[in-house]
Length: 79
Image (cartoon, rainbow, N blue to C red):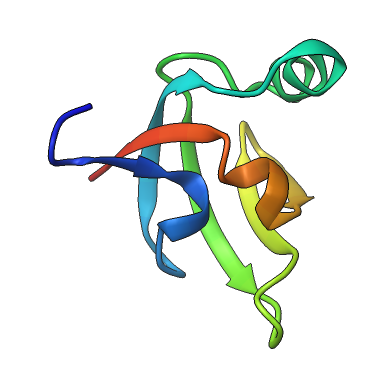
């Protein structure tokens, strides 16, 4: 993991990141891939809820809310 790699959950509001790889396994991994979270996909953090969970992301033109439990298993490079 290089210095620019972090989890999707740590991306600040209004910033964009590119997916490197998924740490999730099983059905959750498949679900994340089905919504477009594959290597190279750009994801923008749109809004974090006041409690910090869930967070709204723009993924391939769709707004998707992910729990911190799931977004912390998505490794990204911030741009």
